[in-house]
Image (tube, rainbow, N blue to C red; front, side, top):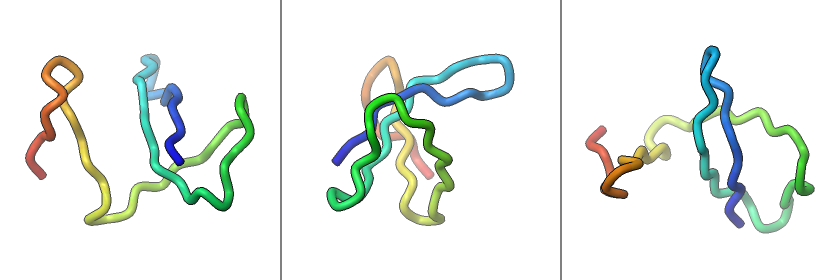
Length: 54
């Protein structure tokens, strides 16, 4: 399952998409605390959609 939300980064807010287990889908509107796993994080350009290099 994918979770679409907004991350607070300092004073700014950034769009965020996170893939989670289909077994434990969070309820709509809930607050999640995300900790990226080394080697499992992918970052994409918001303008082109292309994956940015590691």
